[in-house]
Amino acid sequence: MTAHPSPGPRPSTPRNAPRTAADRARYDRATAHLDAPVAIVDLDAFDANADDLVRRAAGKPIRVASKSVRCRALLERVLARDGFAGIMSFTLAESLWLAESGFGDVLLAYPSADRAGFARLTADPKLAAAVTVMVDDPAQLRLIDEARDGGTEEVRVCLELDTAYRVLGGRVRVGALRSPLHSPAQVAALARAIVRRPGFRLVGVMAYEGHVAGVGDAVEGHPARSRAIRMMQTAARRELAARRGATIAAVRAAAPDLEFVNGGGTGSVQHTAAEHAVTEIAAGSGLFVPRLFDNYTSFSGRPAALFAQPVVRRPGAGTVTVLGGGYPASGVAGPDRSPVPYLPEGLRYDPQEGAGEVQTPLHGPAADDLSIGDKVWFRHAKAGELCERFATLHLVEGETVTASVPTYRGEGHAFL
Image (tube, rainbow, N blue to C red; front, side):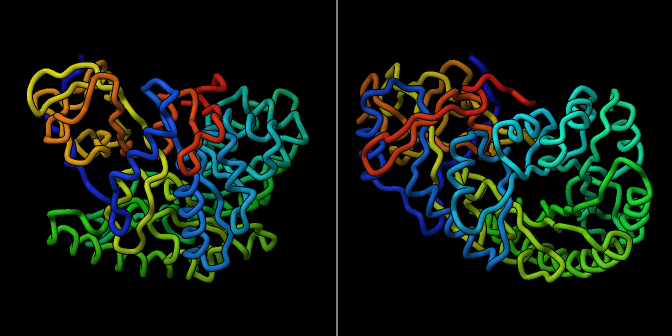
């Protein structure tokens, strides 16, 4: 058993999307023929979340972040809907696999040092036409050239702008440590270098404002902190809109045929879409709506991806133990990275054990109504990372599993 020092997150309900006993009964009936552990996607919720993303994007296309989905069948489903176009991938190997699978527009969101992958990319016209790679440093261009191994195909390139909000003369920085290119002049200088360099074509600019799109501004039980987050995000959006606009103007002076400017994320769709310089929005977590996306004032979604663990023990009154369930999410370790017990309502982790690798005790009045073999439904903290734990997603419509589809893992892939 893997024990955690903290009790993990308290059960929470997404705003405007209350869970009900009917939901639990529906999921239990749909999966009655399936033994837990089991993972599902509620297609009604998935499609409703997709519709909400499109509404918030206000006419600008949404590029789906594959790391938040990690299932080809669901990527195909959402890309078949109006308002979605293209994939934002997370590794070069994944990008090439998706392109070989028929996805024709794949933007790699992170720089890569996969020399073998670049050799394949530059040797194959189909792959080179479908995949755009991310750079923010001339050294990355040199690595690609050194990896060509005779490949002569032109490489499509996207530049990444650092979106971090800097105050007090740069002494305080809010935002992820991503690109070193912060100013319009820095981005434009690299853009000119790419335009002059044979074998590369600059086609896009990306700027992901994770401190806005990925940080909830309505943290339950912390009103002062929530107000501070909202104030920071308002100021950060204002600063970034001006800097992003200036950056794109400077880049277009060097590369007037720029194809796209990508920005945003699930938590900032409508704000980023309002910027004239942005031509498309990135989003993915808003399709599954994991628990980290419960605390936003700008939108609310319906939990679509869930997993169930079976009750295997009843240690005493008010307590059951389920098999496994210790699926922590990436990021700074803490209670908010644990899955949350979701259905039935009112279950909580044991503070001495938390979510365990092979067993997880749960306390609460609902435990007394659970029998050996019953399912307890959980929500993962982050979206696509759930698929690293399950080979299959069972797609639920109403009270029926209408399809069972492989995740990346189920297709034999673990790209990171």
